[in-house]
Length: 300
Image (tube, rainbow, N blue to C red):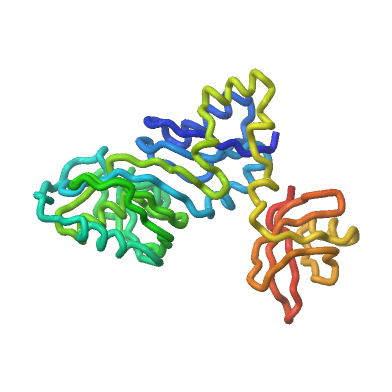
């Protein structure tokens, strides 16, 4: 089976816990997830099975949408409610206008510092493990460029706020909450997080692990999962001539004159690749001596 399942991750489980459960349910060893969700967070966690694990990184690169609950006036070391309280301040002077202005400051391309309590690695070790081992002073946080496409306030009953954020990969919503607290000078932390969308995968079509078991028992797994081609459907395509397919599968570089058909645009980068018989993989476009070419990116 080479499919992608839209799994609803419950609270209290790590993303690796979900992978382990899916392995047990499906009896397949080759299983991978497409972007870590914190144990307390819930929502969309696409799980790739079999050869579909080759596109885990492509799904990880897709924009994501989250619904976040934030509380002003309390700062924690983890930037969420699982951590130790560092400082408590009175947020009663903060107005709705203040909050809106602070949230708007996060929209666009920004430099974001990740939380020390995260799975990012420093010299081969996860930062959260270093902190818990008392070696947090060895961590030199480095800001990363992220893109916040939009932030929409869903409800506001200060000091409590619920907002939706659409963002690029690598974004820590916890850091958004922490940074808002710093801007307003009262502190803030995240109290709840739902990932509602990753690429084409949406929360209203996500299935629980219990549902996955029932689908397995009813022999309905295929109709409740996605193919690799489905996941790459937003990419332009090229169709290779018969004499180029084998060359592509061996990692060769193929010139545009050997494309049989395509719907490429000027800024096309990754593409779906087809033979006359159907989908065979993804390709990376590039130019060499002014000639448009493609080479194998993921071959299926």
